[in-house]
Image (tube, rainbow over all chains, first blue to last red; front, top):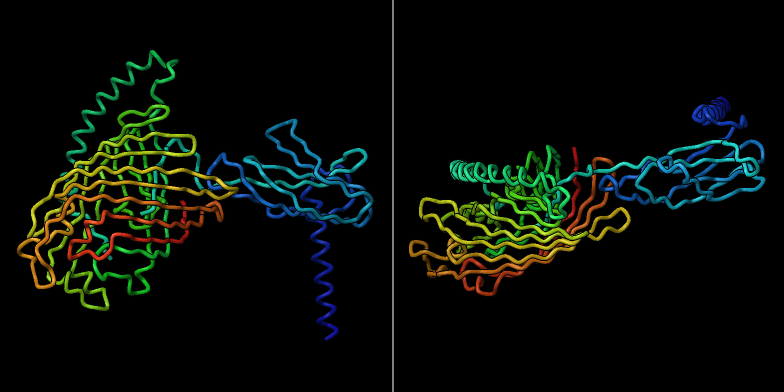
Length: 143
Length: 305
């Protein structure tokens, strides 16, 4: 029995370790070297037609081994000046937030330090669509 | 159940007619395009016709439907399932379009057409489509749990195809169109062709709400006397004790509908719709008809390739 438990704990520790490594690897452009687990869910927002605003509620979650003051930013990479600070967590080693997503473009969520705005982690929400935006103007009905 | 396969010979005749008309309209449209090249700054200059685009969709839905024929109901579980193969394709003003807001059939809802002129807010098309579905009384009786004496021994009614001039007007989030169709029924062994006018109009207003598309629609259709009589009239050779002789008059159909679509993924969307149809009261005078108000409800998923 102890063997099974220890195997389970080992697996869990290994998974957590891999998870942290992955999180750091995913953020190659991270300028702060401290390890942080940063997740944004869902990672995709689907709209019916290309070009339409997509609506979703995004859950942002982060966790660190050490305490730090961090802020969450929303960036539209297509609009260079579009950088919006959403929420800050002073002196904390974890944080969670629900963010209203409304955009027809992909948006990037970045975790930055409160004081010098150094990038800690980032993730992108991709906007996709069911129907391409065509020139065809349809006139449909049901029956 | 009532879905008819097209009579290929008849369809071929229609296609030939359409092709001849296309030849004339293409020539005149080309000329119009050339003459307008010099006035592109004019706000009323034509906008570009549809380029090559295509989309193929599969629709699977559950539908509770009614038809006007007396005592005919959905009886088996599979009567409620509908599978639609929907192809939309356009090229240089020609188009084949299915109705992705309906799940009845790929053929029954398809429209073949050509854009005669495309303006900023309006458009003129020539359309070839099936306007009225036919029905086979023997097949209906086979599928029903009870005998329907009004339909027993009745001649088959073929579908009605039509060639139409369609005017469409576009608003910000809405469209209105009206078809003036020269329609002709199919021919069966006992009945001759019936010809007549169909005027079919529809208004659809899109209300976007978050990721939902909600369409509110209303339509009014006029059917010529000869066409109505072909379907619900009773000829002398069809008269029985349950089915007296009947000459049907022309008729109207009014429709109100709500349709909603929601994206589930890049390929799948959820759709649901409710259509309320009102036919003119006089159709109930036919011994074949027992209702002129129909409620149709559908819920399903659409896969887009």
